[in-house]
Amino acid sequence: MERLNVSLCGINLDNPVIPASGTFGYGYEFAELYDINILGTLSFKGTTKGPRFGNPTPRIAECTSGMINSVGLQNPGVDKVISEELPKLKKCFDKKVMANVSGFSIDDYVYTCERLDDIDEIGWLEVNISCPNVHGGGMSFGTDPKAAASVTKAVKSAVKKPVIIKLTPNVTDIVSIAKACEDEGADGLSLINTMMGMRINLKTKKPVIANKMGGFSGPAIFPVALRMVYQVYEAVNIPIIGMGGIASAEDVVEMMLAGATACEIGAMNLVDPMICKKIIEDLPEVMDKYGIKNLESIIGGAHNG
Ligand code: SIN
Image 1 (cartoon, rainbow, N blue to C red):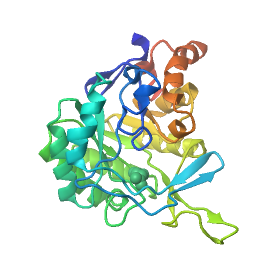
Image 2: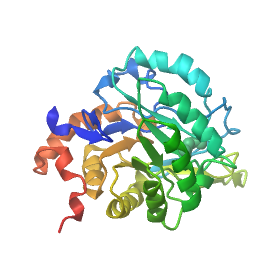
Image 3: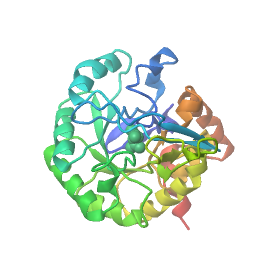
Image 4: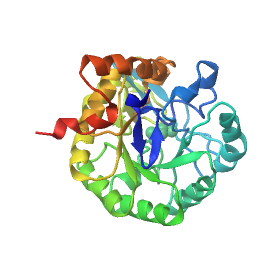
């Protein structure tokens, strides 16, 4: 249905709905539930240079209208992602996929992005400088404009595919980080990753999560994400993927009015594995209800006038 089409860094998406990294595996797991070719694309599990076992358990804490995770970038490493995971995805997904990349040094990011840049099925490199659950990497690059700029510059000079930098909300001024990435050539931005949070178990009187703190996501953070997308849209001229607590077709429309070109759906995949399909199916009716002819025309619409 053409009225749902959007263009993300020069690649056409049938619709703006993208399952967020870390909530949709490598995609093929969900192909048992529905035809994942209906998605705009999907962002696969955060991938690092080497394999990672992840953080000690418990890694998850439930909250009102959301959850906290401290997974710690568990993944098989870029070699196995290329040799084992992507061939399985290719069997059930005909579209370009988004590769999500994490690292602990600039060299890590460059190495992993260079490896993935050679893979035809990958359309975009989503560079995660916002993981709150690891030491010495992840979010430490995303909380300082200079560090964010350095990662962006190094990756951009090493790859050909569009580079989308994934930003953290755990900063006082997300706009300065977004602009630093744009200035070094980022092709797009995705925001927001999770917000730092914690829970304490009243029986043990200790933090619920073994790592004490983790990243809070889910519908409770939607207004914060929307506010940050709105602010960043005013400051940059590159596309934004909005994410953070999106749970419905109405939320997608709201996020696009704030300035998102596409939307990632994260925590809600863990509540309802069919949520992305449902949102795509609901979009035409919601568009009709609000007099929207096509989605591309509403991007940033809340800024006009
Ligand atoms: C994790 O693996 O800890 C989550 C990834 C992220 O929040 O970026």
